[in-house]
Image (cartoon, rainbow, N blue to C red):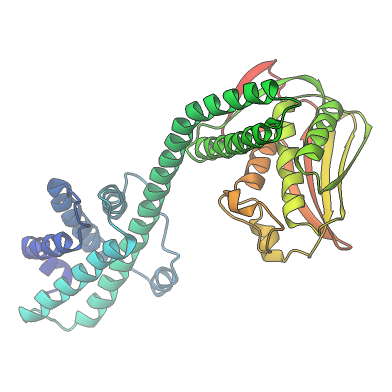
Length: 383
């Protein structure tokens, strides 16, 4: 009996074996959806049977063995549904893949035990293994996507829940700072306020990250503004918060644009803070702004160890930190600063890039002079 025929004839036996094994893999306390559990596996077996009966050329077989199978189109595949359901049920990736190992072993064991092997058995087993591997790949893609989605929902909820208490802390700290001026308690009050503001920035970063990854986009408040004045004001604040850093600022050319100057200041803050963390101590951090009729260019540079090509390729990825040891402050970083810079640039219709030359690392953010041609006010930009 050919393997495809055997699977069709013994689907229930194979299903019982697979479900029994899946129950042994379930995380402690997980409540498995038994109906979905028993539905996914027969659909996976049906797709495998269909694959086994589909003619395949040597070139197609080689492409599948290299992970280059045709992209699935149409309705969601049974394997993708299986991956998503396992992520929803709290399975780990190793537990999910173990199910496929058990399914593979169950089918081949039952086939051999029934003495149903035929002359084409070797070819059938090769095709069956290919089909299982393809199902694993599809399941992994959807499993990873679902886990990432849940993580982003958690981060968004966490940031949202923290924002209320933090607002109260910062507001109270501001009152204390004002009421204790020129007293022995002034410095402790300032430390409380600075700590609250730092936590607020971390929470805002979490919310921006979760919104961008969940497709909600970044909100811009675009209006006519002088970016030179906005960046200069931010640099003055940074000189206060980073007293050990020497920060120089220079502006030239056209700097009046239609943009969200608050978001631009946030990007400058993140870039300068990053330079202070990873740059060579006691060297000057240079902030420059230049513009023409079409675009404005904001650059932040610092001296320090050169970055590798791999580091440059992943600098703007979320939840990553520098490959070199930070001078200070890294324990309070979530690795979102440069990611947010990139999203701010993209939301304006611009770009940001890093370059290394003559011992200096320079981040350059280029923005169009007219970020929002549709009018003033808030807009949501999908990432």
